[in-house]
Image 1 (cartoon, protein in one colour):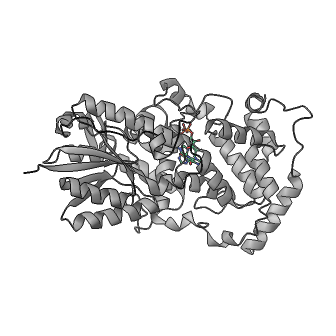
Image 2: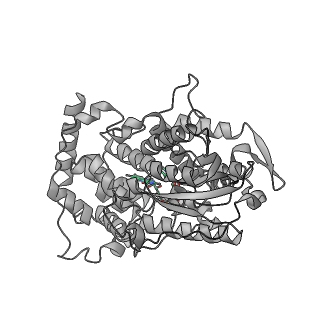
Image 3: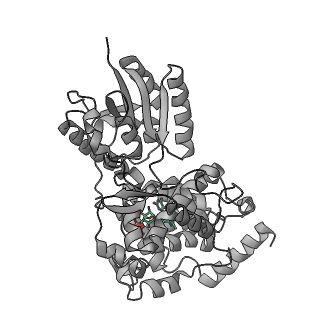
Length: 445
Ligand SMILES: Cc1cc2nc3c(=O)[nH]c(=O)nc-3n(C[C@H](O)[C@H](O)[C@H](O)COP(=O)(O)OP(=O)(O)OC[C@H]3O[C@@H](n4cnc5c(N)ncnc54)[C@H](O)[C@@H]3O)c2cc1C
């Protein structure tokens, strides 16, 4: 007789510690086979065969597999379309229950619904858990049950909810919602097996990237001084943890607990992350168009030559260019600069925010649909909690304010200040007036 097993399906939660779904799987009745699917429906759409995110996932899976093998288990890494892979797993194993964590992106929601139905047709339970955020779905809604669309009241409710239930952790009373899941107590429930083969990067059609990845840890000092330093791109003032939050290589609960103790401004940033995940969940239509439909009427100019110059960091506006060059070279861009380059593209150049969003999606190591879409819609003025359209960032005064001594600019634009550096591709005052006129016309304001 073949033994029954449970399966834990890793997705954007690539860690063994403090993992909600994994904890529930390990507490179940049957040994747990951990799996990961290298999803061809996602991978086949990536243009760059040296995409650093794929390399990062592959490296992380290799480490996870190593950790699991030290526990006498393994990681089953599969390559293909999820439906076919699950069909194969159903043929190979006798499965009692499948455990996984929630993913709020529209593609993931559809995928999970179809896998749930497939499993149900075999009378297999599909149990899913919250892990990626502190609060999800309907946990933070207005008193009338409707989702928030403005950050400040959302964040107040978020903070208030954190205080509604407490738990004991390492002798301290902490919010129940930040209490870690002690998966390590149940590690003996991983299936005992010899190591399984894992496809190499080359076998799945990719190669190693030449980018390096930021570490998973940050100093206490950095978080402590976050509010003072976070707006200055020349300083090492932000955590660079985005990629780790995105792929779940660190736990959001642990970081929020840390932030709560050390710096509330840092905590606010983590709340923005929850906020945008909730917006995407409640309003999936933001993926296609503006949250405020009137903004879909804007007559974008979409000048190809301007777009290329923006991508290459050759607009003649140094803060914009330094940001784009940083992105192209490292897969990272400082938040203040993301706001400036996004505003410049949409407002000064009148290029559709979706083109900028797509470029960021291809380049950012920390790319996350919810936060990227939220950030772009905010910058274009068409989002949930957007700056009013008539507030247009002046890229020159942003540079004078946040990189006064041009340390960041010089780092990325060695030819700045020489004849080799391009002249501005648009004149600020003209571009500002043109933007106001175009937005007004679309909005009938
Ligand atoms: C146009 C635009 C596009 C963006 N695209 C993304 C994206 O694809 N992925 C992404 O994670 N963030 C995105 N952001 C938000 C923010 O710029 C990045 O999270 C941040 O710069 C990442 O650097 P860090 O890890 O050093 O952040 P820190 O400043 O150290 O913040 C810590 C964490 O908080 C979260 N966070 C911080 N600011 C925000 C924010 N405004 N919205 C949502 N979460 C936030 C992130 O998870 C971040 O890693 C975007 C912002 C803009 C304006």
